[in-house]
Length: 286
Image (cartoon, rainbow, N blue to C red):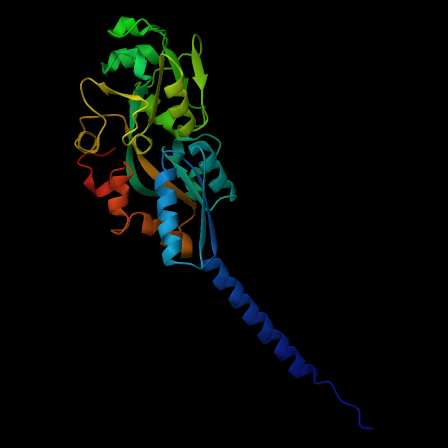
């Protein structure tokens, strides 16, 4: 019987070719990953979810999962590599404890933040100084600003919230919110809406994307200026912020495709419908 000889040279070549092919396939998967995890701002969440739904319809081989948790959580997650995209209402450099220089910033929209209250307070308009005095605890009853005799109950977001940071910076001019008296903290925009509708005297702030035609709350003007797209885009209404999508390094592959889709012409009508403002519509900048 003739013994078969193993051609080790040929075997080595086959192994080398197999290794190269596997490496190429692995590289393709990295550039064209099939799943994207988006974490962060609840103010940006409705737009991110709508874009994800439409993007996945056009790209059935890609899964996009969108979670809230707040801007701070989003920035921390993307900087640590546990999320592909971190959504934020604030610039990454404003968040302590992260390597913001390693992140790439993609501004996808502008959102306004409205001051909202329980419908029983009897106030439709506040001056900027009255707004500051309410959230810093100097005004404790709505009758002091022309409303009903109802104690003020401030509903704040957690310190990690980008909505809170933006409101403090642009609505309160950096003033420190009250930590005494009647104050509550809610973790999400949805919880804020519920708290406002159910708590007599309650006041808070929220992204315009959560208001629409909500009849259970009262939207308050500031210096007789309503929080709407026109007043924000021309600079009359001051409480607004850019909505950011951050990635570690430059966005590539499916991640880049998704972010590009958020700002595409196809999404523009939905950006407006959901209460955001396209970047290109802004007549002022920050």
